[in-house]
Amino acid sequence: MTVNFLKTADFLQEELQAFFRVLRLGGDVEAIRSAAERLRKTVDEVEPLAKDPGEAWKDLAPDQRWAYLRVLSHLGTADHEIKVATQQIQQRTAVNS
Image (tube, rainbow, N blue to C red):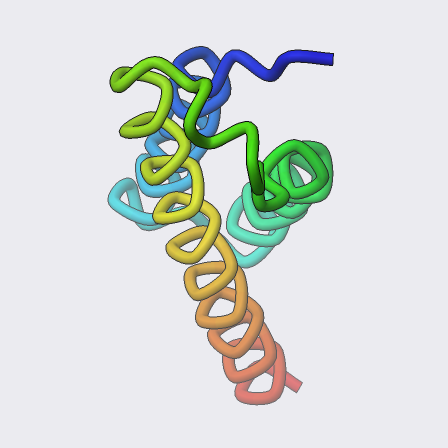
């Protein structure tokens, strides 16, 4: 199976932008939780596709190579932002308890 890293990178970027949009709009705890869960599902879906291409790397076109690196970068960003959002949710719910 050949992965189209361009489409995968674009999809992941769109999901990150949707997540950040919720944060920018100052969403309540439930909105942030929902956005984080959606982003987590996306990460879980994309991570298996982002495994090291190994020897196939040399067969990838340059645009696919760059897109693969974008996928890795977006996955790292998504993981970090999910952790931060989870901490913020915990803090907000602890204060409101």
